Length: 355
Image (cartoon, rainbow, N blue to C red; front, side, top):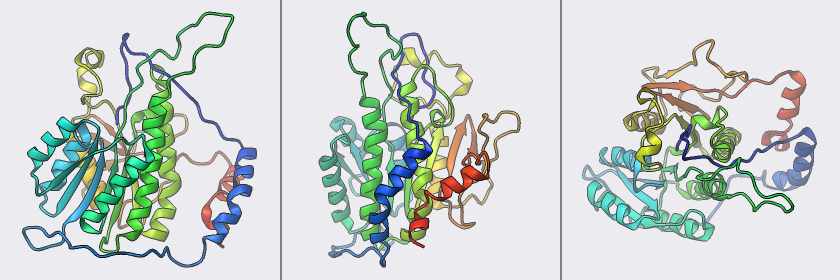
């Protein structure tokens, strides 16, 4: 949701996640048998039928679920979909007042608010079930809820005893709850036989692509969700027709920070929230007919430059859309350093165990 956070009054926590070839080997030895056991046929579930909501034009209403949907980017994307006339948006948030206000703004016939704590799996799962039961379908999920860290990761502590544990809330919300949201999305997308285009967008950040010294834990959480998107996108699309993409915006002025914190940024670095909506709508529609997704400029790429990528030429999936000012960049997966690493990572692909 938020990218580079700065300001003398805001220092944040950090965590780093590392994987080794040995860890990959141990992991795949553990999961290989369950993966092979799941190779038989399509995903079969009992699908009850419910009355189908229709738009004013008589077409079936599409169903969207948006976490962090009562304000900021989530709310603006919800408005954009509701204005199309064939979407019903379900807004998940903890802030009841904002949620009810959002529904009033959008319209009771186009939006439903669900007070939901995304940190609580059962709470989140029950809301997913309610959303699905509303129209017996799920077409779009925006895994958007997130926070920034608000403590000094670099703070010194008295010697002679261990320091207290770091605050893990930013990891729990920005990473763990997103994993749970993706997990539940997969389940309900699979049941949505009425949906001809199932779409999941994850809010990452430019902090998923670059270091962010002042907010290392936030940065780690966003690196995590980008890795999640790139890992699941090929399989989700190939086997269940679910398109997964991520947005990686630079600083967007939302209610995540107060004006004092926002004032630490240069005025010309912000991404207009309308640009975030434009990127999401492009990914929801699945096509970049106007070539809005640019290649990063030569000389400005990170040391792990963008190469690779996943697309089928028709519908977009597996894309990380970086937003800088008014521009959108297609940030592709870094290329492998050598052929040995390429073979190593090939061994982690799920299809290897389905062949």
